Length: 140
Image (cartoon, rainbow, N blue to C red; front, top):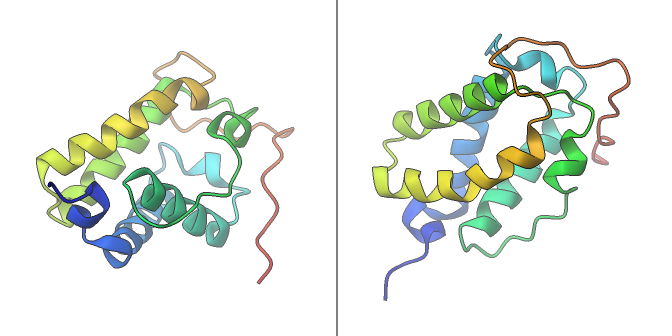
């Protein structure tokens, strides 16, 4: 029997390292970082780790909001979603994640585009709308 994607990615330690690199890459990317202006990065890290862990067959349980609810009112463009995917692929390449595993992760994330993108535009670097309400910070 083939090992789960979670196992092939290297388990929780590898997923954590990938998420942290990805978070830092996104924070430094002027094409999309304005959308994260009010995001609690500690919360984002935990939610991404749990989400990727669960989606790849690991033992974690994602307890965050749906992708639609989390991104509602952010006015994310198609171009910004594509930039985010490019950052994720760059992170995968940095960690030498295999093409098969990259494809499987992207196949899980791809359908989320319709829940995240609100504007069909190639524009990037757009500001977060003033009315957007970020999720509350995690209790420390």
